[in-house]
Every structure is written in structure tokens, then in C-alpha cells.
Length: 122
Image (cartoon, rainbow, N blue to C red; front, side):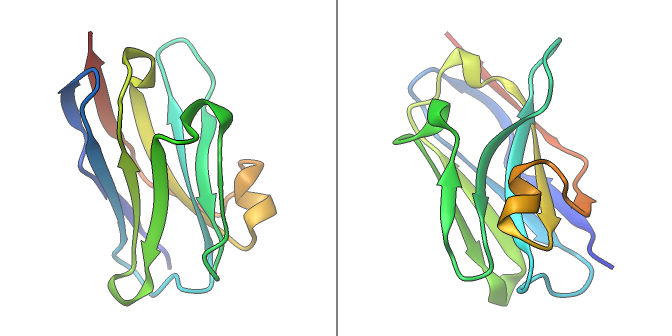
């Protein structure tokens, strides 16, 4: 059973950086595709970035050049490095795991974390 727990959220000023981490406290997720999503108040949850089991990544246009997704299978952890943060990045960030990059990318993930709040002040 995959159990995802996010950490690293918080309050940061515009232009600052945060690194989110998501740990699988259940069994290893080395074979899963992993993703980060976010949901701002009053908006639908949307894709931020995904990474498949061999390290191929894809980012949403809104975060290209600023956010980087990576994974450390030895630590059962997926990261989201967020640089040059903007107030519009404020949201609850969720990690997700699924059987393929395409599935996770579409939001059809098998497992979801509880989310971590990121707030960017102007």
C-alpha cells in the first residue's frame, strides 16, 4: 500500500524558494509515475509536474523554468523544487502516484497525499 505524506510547505515572499517533499511511508514506489498537483481557493486541482519511473519529466507551462520535479527511489521520495515563486503559486500542493506518466498527468492517479499549503506573499 502506497501512503504519501507531503512536507515543506509554508509562507514565502515573492521571488523566494521552497522545496516540497513527498515520502511514501508504505512500500517502495520505484515503479510508479509520480506527480505534483495544486489547488488554489475556488479553482480546480491542476497538474504542476510529473516524473515517470525512469526520470522523464513534464512541467505545466505556468511553472516551466521555475519548478523542478525529481525523485530519489532509495528514499521513496519525490521532490518539487520551486524557485522564483509568485503570489499566483499560492495553493495546496498534492503529490500523487500512479501506474504511468500518462495516467498521473491526466489526474488518474492511484494514490494521493493529504496536501501541503504553500503561500506566496507579494
